[in-house]
Amino acid sequence: MATLRQLEYLVTVVDSGSFTRAAELLHVSQPALSHQVRALERDSGGPLLERLPRSVRLTPMGRAMLPHARAALADAGRARSAARRAAGLETGELQLAAVYSVVLGVLPPVLHLWRQTHPQIQVRLLDHRHSAELHDTMTVGRADLAVGPRPPHWDGLLRELGTEEFVVVVTADDPAARQGATRVRLADLSERSWVHYATGNGLAEILDRTCAAAGFRPLTAVRTEQTAAAPLLAAAGLGPALVPANVIPPHFTGRLLRPDPPVRRALTAYTRPHPDPLTTAFLDMLAAHARVLPAHVEEHLGPDLGTD
Image 1 (spheres, rainbow, N blue to C red):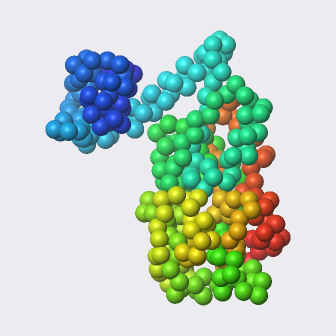
Image 2 (cartoon, rainbow, N blue to C red):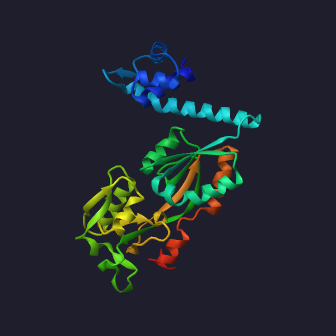
Image 3 (tube, rainbow, N blue to C red):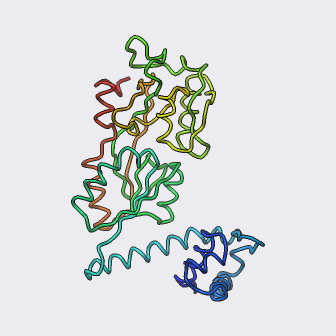
């Protein structure tokens, strides 16, 4: 029967990419590590890893086992933390997963408040490029709570946080913003080259889908891996950018325009069906204090943001 130690060894080998590096991280000898992995493979009924000259690769059996191994390790860690908190042996840790834009805009004020009221609780933040990655992280049990777009299917507890608004960012003197304009039809920007997002960032799909609905495919001036860089690049004149309003920093020098028609997505927080008290406490604080639209952006755009 597989042991937690064997599962930990398997996960570490996969994450580090080699038996040598995994042995260093686990502070065990490489022969001992290899012995435990082979024992796990015998118990599983076949090879889990393909040993390559300079790396390792999961076999189909290994790919099937890996998410369950991660989930088992995460459950064991939570069980230890719960027991130690009850015994007064440690302060606890919250594992929080979120998409990039939420990490940049929605979470910082809530995390600041959480730190003030729960200074003994550590927060481990897992940020993701795409909502599908976020959902996968929760499905395999690597986080206590996820914050991001509504997942397609979720059997646990889900709390609505609000509707995220997207804005078009241009330079202060851009022709689209002339004469005090506050809205822009995306079709009017069809000939422009855009600040786009790298493949794998969920915002790239949103921009492509939104422009397709407006009847065109966006030309690309530059692609960025970093969500926070998009509004800065647009304000510097590289091209318009479609960004979540909550990532716009205070004292922003670019011009913000409402896309017409509006671009929105629901933000949620979701967790297991019966979360532990620590997760429940953070979820309650998040629901009470999260601002999907920051005050400085609302002031910049005016009170009619979100009207059709």
